[in-house]
Amino acid sequence: MIPQILILYYSRNGATQRLADAIATGVVQAGGEPLLRTVAGPGEPASARDLMVEPSDLSLCDGLIMGSPVRFGHMASALQQFWETSSPQWLRGELQGKPAGVFTSGSSMHSGQEATLLSMGVPLLHHGMLLCGIPYTEPAIQQTQAGGSPYGASHVEHGRGPHLSEHELQIAITLGQRVTAAAQALKSSREQGLI
Image (cartoon, rainbow, N blue to C red):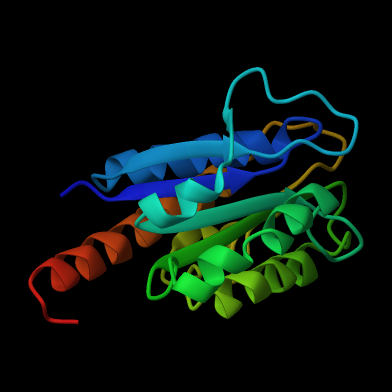
């Protein structure tokens, strides 16, 4: 009964991918299996490391965590295009009742990270997913001088490049743990016929 958590992301310069890796660590620590998947932008080659997302990944996962760099307060167009093809899965309710989370990266503190996190939740809510944030009981949320918010994990470059700060790393791991724990509880309840 190991929950499979789809970590769907787009990364151009590596920071969002590093967050995805940290989230995957949290998924494993919580007893889940991370499924790292990506999308390619227009005219870009596919990822050399992770598989391209397939629509079937949505039906197979027990939870989903999505990440994108900041694009004027929204997700990257490659991710948006993927969601625009997901009407068949939406009509069948393949993500309904599954937990979700979001993460992002940006070049500066006021690059639009929280707007991006909130806007990424919109297609997930349309699919009937249950959004998980990060509570203030996570010490790194209160201590961070860079990325991280109650809405999701994030990275602020500040000229450091894609390297995550200690707090950004911990917040990303916590997000992976929280979504996995929720997925495990919901999966168990469904299998027992409780929901």
